[in-house]
Amino acid sequence: MTPVFDSSMFTAALAGPFGAVLLTVFLPTVASLIVDAVILLIRKKRVGPLLFAVAFTVAVAVAGTLMWQYGVNNSMDPASTESSTAALASTLLPFGIGGAVFALIVRQANQAIDRRNAARRRGRRRQTRPTAA
Image (cartoon, rainbow, N blue to C red; front, side, top):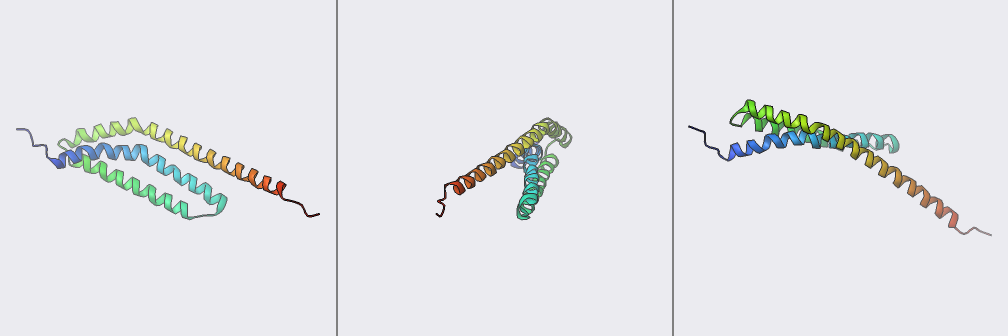
């Protein structure tokens, strides 16, 4: 006799893989915000973004871990579910880290371009001011 597949098993079947995706794809991207916040702390001495980035990273890590554990512990076959979500995680992790590094580079390049454009605008305003005769 096979067990009845009820809604809690369906939720567990979705929670495990989604927790793995959350930990391997979204967590590295969110963790790259910490690097942005450290750079902002060094440049502008602002601590708020760093505290937010750390809190957000911890929240995503806890949510992903809880979802993964819920999916593994409440499935029909915990051993195969754990191995399949671990295989999914090991497959997605390089893409998650690569995406996080790419996003970090794009954000830093964008900030550098914005700073350069702001400096050019400040320079133009100084040159176009009328001089007192």
